[in-house]
Amino acid sequence: MSVTVRVPAKVNVQLAVGAARPDGFHDLANVFLAVGLYDEITVTPAAPGDGVHVTCDGPDAALVPLDGTNLAARAAEALAARYGRRPDVRIHIAKDIPVAGGMAGGSADGAGALVACDALWGTAAPRRELLDICAELGSDVPFSLLGGAALGTGRGEKLTALDVGGVFHWVFAMADRGLSTPAVFREFDRLAEGRDVPAPVASRPLLDALAKGDPDALAAAVSNDLQPAALSLFPALADTLAAGTAAGALTALVSGSGPTTAFLARDAESAVKVADVLRVSGTCRSVRTASGPAQGATLIPRERAG
Ligand code: C5P
Image 1 (cartoon, rainbow, N blue to C red):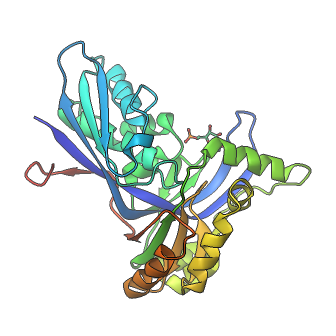
Image 2: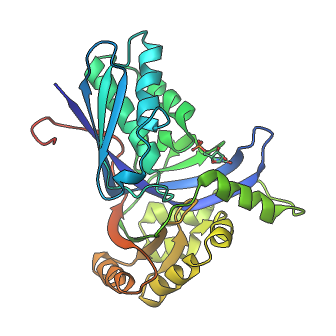
């Protein structure tokens, strides 16, 4: 008996960041779009008393922590604790989302393990409770469960689903090293010193562009307040952004806290062209195309799993 759940990556089409709060987090207006790059999380019962055991495969598997800090392990433990059962489970992560890339790969594994363990253990937790556990695990984890497109406020965990009127075609360029999200937020604070940081608000033109499914309007409206901080810590990302723009992308931005860079293309054909140019540009480690919105954490029927 095993259960497999597929969970998408995300790109932030808007990431408006406010001043640091007393708890160290930042208030955000965070417009998430789930895109079709996926991790698959498979859970299998372990012997009583064995606890949680995590394994991982995929191109970046060596970079994934397999101990109790892994969000998938923490999700299994959190659900077991709520339902007064032992978290004896084997979790396998088939990882395709870049690690430490600003695409919510770790969050995807947390949301996936939660949904998978809920099904495996028959806990049948209400969705509201699953979303609460996700919010405890990390700011981006609730969105990994939800998928589609959503506005995240608070520290990003309070979600309002958004309408999307079409398919957006993206190219993602992976860098040759990761960036730590806390380090990027610290750099944001350093760069903001002595300035008034306005309260973050969602952009009306951006929400309209999503609702219309209009790539040109979306390209004109995207923004990421963490981009200057990511570029300050990783200046070479500017070359990747420039290479994608020169290749015909409608716009280029750092994805979340980076260092993955995201390029919006007018259509699928244009995305392939931009990806081909980026691949030979020498400015990134690897390149993928993916479209969004994509479905959130989804159970895969047993015959298709594995
Ligand atoms: O919530 P999560 O654990 O994913 O956040 C990782 C880190 O990113 C936090 O410890 C904090 O440094 C930073 N962060 C923040 N404000 C947010 C979300 C994350 O400062 N809204």
